[in-house]
Length: 155
Image (cartoon, rainbow, N blue to C red):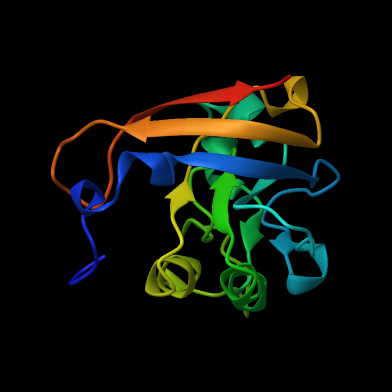
């Protein structure tokens, strides 16, 4: 985001998270994830598991579920970073953009504006329990985004 922090300004320990996985696998194309879906638990990151990683490499991948403005605000208020198995926590503009759907990067702005990180394009979330440790260390590229090797650690 313009004028936001770059990843190199974060301590490396900021990329290890106590994660809570939120089952959103019942959602369909462009369905919203609202504030009512955001857990109220002690955690560093809310991981929204939609199963959308199964659509990787297809046009349908762009039609993913997304966080609403109030959903992103609830995450920010609770201090959660956000992880998604979709292209973005925001809706991706396509020919199927629904009327009334938020536009722009409103979830990004709410989360990053509260200094809460976003991790996108996660996969294999069905292999994690509801609670786990997520380690997602970005490559030191000096920007506000970078590829990560995301690993779920389970006791």
